[in-house]
Length: 254
Image 1 (tube, rainbow, N blue to C red):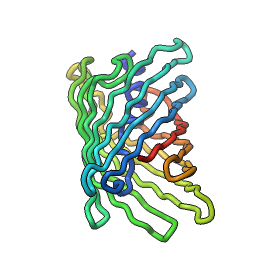
Image 2: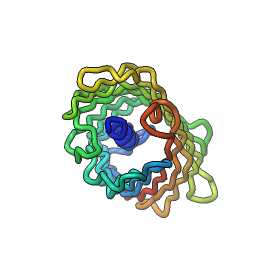
Image 3: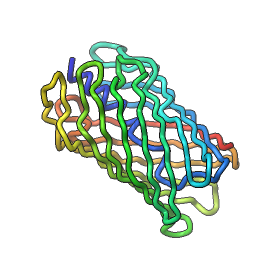
Image 4: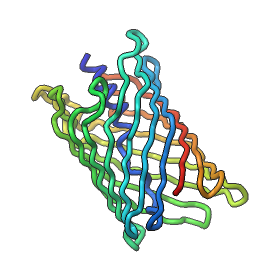
């Protein structure tokens, strides 16, 4: 049972382990809302989630966002049937962008989601981001972060985790299409604990590769489609298999 709980928590972490993106914030007074579907799957497990979020730049260079407003329709083990549904933990995110292409951010996860699959402790994540245009059509976004967790209702505490992430976007000049490729490396710096016992997962690492594309229909609406492939002990270990995520999102700019 513990193994299956940890698999579910790992899958939830995937959706909540990020600020809105790794590129500069919008102009003052500009905002964006997101609505989409995310499907996670491997041989023994699959789940389907409605995803949403909103961000707004309240003063120059300062963005406030409410992320991970997600609803899980189902989470299903092949040998047991559906066992999960309900609200995920929302995340309050603040980003401030400096003039030298560097941003700082803080994400605060609220443990108010459905306890059949969400982490029921608080988490705080912070870090720095860097973004630049390599050439006119090619942009780089990157991030280094550190996440801390409190003990949850099941006497489980995740180990402190760090991430290094990056994304390359290529805006095709002739059409409003932007293919992108992303990479995220995760490393658990300390053992997680369950009922005051170390789970010996400190040092577990994970790698996720994302391939996708965004299409801008007009200045108000855009959409993207992506495939994310996860591998490594951080996701796998003794608790499950490598897994994949397919995501489709619509964005509404205001």
